[in-house]
Image (cartoon, rainbow, N blue to C red; front, top):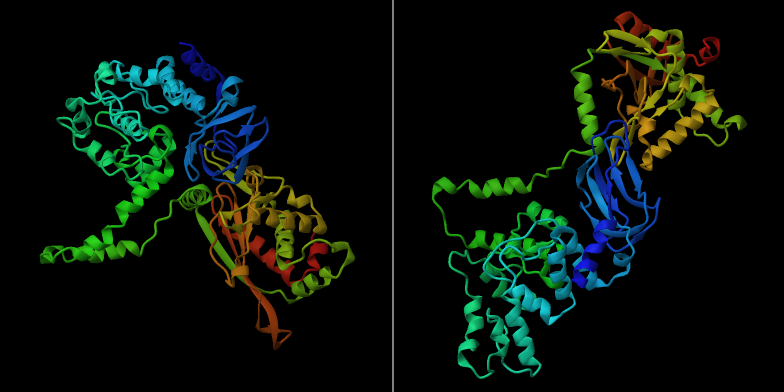
Length: 536
């Protein structure tokens, strides 16, 4: 009972870290990357993983010290908020124990102190553990982490012949250790009856489907041991079980290579590779089928030309937001084509201005400033719709969203209180916003609370589009590509820099007259940038 008490002791010191809500009411997050592995020491505040929510990628710090006991989910798994994702052993003895004690402690967490004693003794290689396991009553076989105990008529019987073979190789005699009777170890070495016992033990029990033969006969792992015998459950950690389920692999057919017969991730991948390898040759050797089956090869060929990408994270949130917006807010889009030659000259001049040194100057900056000027002249456009109270909520501030394409998908961080910023301040905020988005460091807070948005489709060589509103916002402006093209200027056709603007707005909040005035003001400022001073 001493070993049992020691094995069960760490259970009280194991703490769970649950998936937190890192956004505003988000319900799930995807684990992008683990920075720790079981056995690693962690300290309070250390980042253990990176997760992706519907709004941003966030690093999660652990809130306590200890040794990583288990990672509950693999990378790429979407986990609900509040679900434990990692366990940490904060106790003393288990943190520094060896490999055998660690295995015993892990079993103790799930199977109780009695089973833990058996596992601990078996891990230490004691003869008492082997004998005790053989004499254990039905229903008391220890298993690995979290799946209870499996009942059966045998208790790791294939391990006994393996031990016997090892004894023979070492010159210990031919005593048959595989006999189920406790007195088998005392049988004479020359007795002919026990010699046939290992062969009989290798045969499937009545009613068995042959799983034991599949696992044990081949000896692929070099030990001749099956991963599971008839009536028992293969030993594997929960992430490995999930991997096997995802790949369609039956763990009972996998040959284990881990310690104590545990199936590892590599074992599952190897089984999947073996299962997939014969598929093509089998198809080639298959005799001609009737005409009813003639379409089958083309169906499989068609499947090979398709790739299915799970919709999750930012793309999932964007898709849902666009559907909600498109079928909730009545959209109206208006267009205007404008000569922005003077604006392009102003951009070139600002790049040479010492007061603008160190900030990025581009046409988008002046488009943003023109939009803010138009909102100042027509504040009614900066509003939201309260469906519950049936009210229009007019905003006295502008959080200007900028749509940014990132490897994770399209995100829309916003510049807080953009209406109060000077041109240099707006330029700095815009440059920082874009850089942070491209590096994938945009926080959820930076993407919440937007009131209006600009999407710069011109960077892709597109003239314009019909943008969809972000949910809760009143307007979105699409800025098209600036092209040099023939334009009538002062009665003559001349090459001028021209662009097309598109303004989409919520027709519940903004009627055609108001929307037209806002778009016309934006165009007027870009055509004559001096209006930036006149209309302030």
